[in-house]
Length: 99
Ligand SMILES: CC(C)(COP(=O)(O)OP(=O)(O)OC[C@H]1O[C@@H](n2cnc3c(N)ncnc32)[C@H](O)[C@@H]1OP(=O)(O)O)[C@@H](O)C(=O)NCCC(=O)NCCS
Image 1 (cartoon, rainbow, N blue to C red):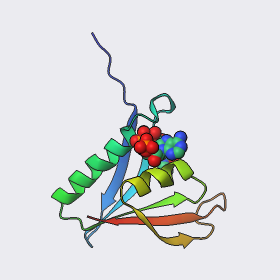
Image 2: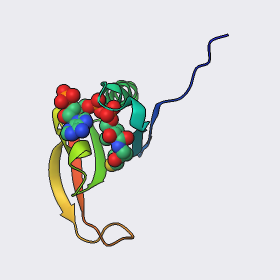
Image 3: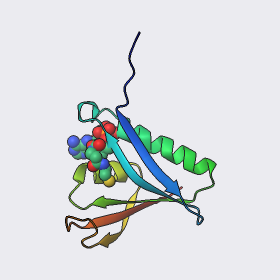
Image 4: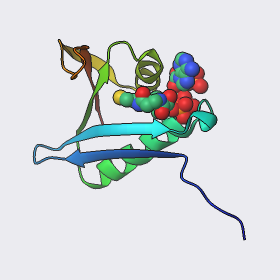
């Protein structure tokens, strides 16, 4: 029997203001750079649209260039910067996309 493993996931929530928030997205190291992160975001957007969401939002470490590149490629723009947002004192960008 062929085994199927989880190699990536995305998790988010929708609030009452037609806004979806992406809390976490990750792809197994061995499977990165193959378009899986992009596909997870596309699937999240498809589900958000079904729920009449108008805006997607997320926070990302300002040092996480790979993730920022991915979000920009998917149409997100940086809308704000939150100083010392994370426990380790690092800053976050708020990124959003209207759908
Ligand atoms: C961020 C992450 C989910 C991307 O997943 P992925 O499956 O590797 O992403 P994709 O293969 O779909 O890449 C899509 C785009 O992301 C960017 N990207 C991906 N890998 C990159 C790298 N090594 N360097 C620069 N940009 C990169 C590119 O813009 C890429 O588009 P392209 O392939 O057309 O150039 C993955 O790197 C990861 O799990 N990182 C650790 C967890 C994390 O940082 N999550 C985000 C927290 S907010």
